[in-house]
Image (cartoon, rainbow, N blue to C red):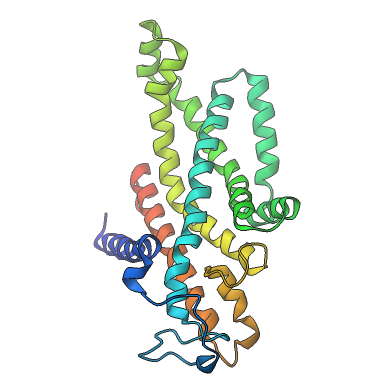
Amino acid sequence: MSRGQRAALWSAVAVLAVIAVAAVWPDLLAPQDPLQTDVRSALLPPSPEHLFGTDQSGRDVYARVVHGAGRSLGIGLLATGIAVVVGLLVGAVAGMAPRGVDLTVMRVNDVLMAFPEFLVALVVVAVLGPGPVNIAIAVTLAAVPVYVRLARVQTRTLRVAEHVEAARILGVPPLRAFTRHVAPGVLGSLSVLATIGIGSSILAAAGLSFLGLGPSEPTAEWGLMLAGGRNVLGQAWWISVFPGIAITLSVVCATVVGRILRARADGRTA
């Protein structure tokens, strides 16, 4: 790893650590109540008293950005985690199953991959209805096909590896051979890809919230905050800009970490 890559990696990790603290322990960074309104302080610009200014209801934007990290990141992490598990199971079945089952599963998966993830998530939310739980389900289903394909490829590669063949010759049951010798390798590859997928999931969840399909007011959530300031962008830019910066930093830093880890796993330069 070059010096530049190392600096980029640690910078991204530092930013993600701060965001993680905001998500797990928001009161440490912003003790203010993110839901407290004060119409006399509405639309105040950034100042020492209100670092990110205030919104139309006089709520502190900095407090809302910090307290919104848990909900915004939570959806992305939950969706990615479930997508990895589902992708591992479905991809492993396709990789270990007879050719007919493999072809059927992968053709369906290819059809899903032909559509952008955000479009798939949007259709799922349109069917299930708005709400944070349905957003998490939608983002999960949209992300699954990528993990299914990778899991299937890795399973087909590892199942003919020498150590797996040796286990079979020694009489190790197929299920046990898979769980001990194939699944860990597949999961490792999926975990590296998931670091990139977290950013995509956060962005998709924020986009759905921006369209009004996620949490409702007065919830502190980045996508919802972004939408709340669009009508007064010329008068009070800070209402949308700061949650937008939070989304951008989260996605970019997660992607940087993911790409560097993936490059190292592939044995090449990022």
